[in-house]
Length: 319
Image: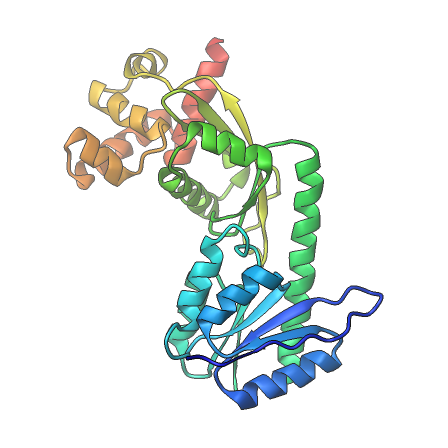
């Protein structure tokens, strides 16, 4: 049975940030507890991942310092569960790991960590990183509250196109038209990948994602940066437009395409990945890629996002 110790400090008139430390080594707990306490934070400590999840749900700390390598449930599995819960998913997690454990550092980012510190711990570095990420998390929360009040459908995406948070209006919209988000999330990442490799990012400041009943227009509100910081977030507005184009409509607007190319383009407009399209049309992924190369060449565009934007612009011209 795991041991658990929770310690609270008396809150000052200025509300203190609450830090949860999770480590199975008592020496690390003691050092961090004392240092964070002296820096003015309220501190919670526990020695295992399972109790960390329970404490996080009960106390909602402002940040979690999490050891990656613990017995029973390690820090990575704990983080996965924290990020899967709507109650704790936005709590920033900083991993603590050994200096040479490169795979742990990579794994920490993969499961949702915002940063890492290496052992043996440099307390000044820990305090600096804690302060930075707390300020960033507070700014994000304030930003979301302001946008929520406008009742606008907004997504915040990280530099890789992963959803960081969404307003209530955006949640309602996605729940209404997208019973599952897997394809939509893949589309967002593909869009950001295109933006990253496009010399003139202004060409790709919008894209669309189609569902059987509605087409969602996605507008990039935050100026794109070629070398953003890891903590950079981009705001995306979602608007509803007309339903997705059928193959006959695509051929009407783009008569230079073959029937098969229009068919591939139809599924591309529906937000399907190349692999999805290959399975739907019973083609090899290589054949789908070849069809898309021909589409890009005929439409004078360089990628999927630009092709979708081009067809949408043609539709708007005709209407």
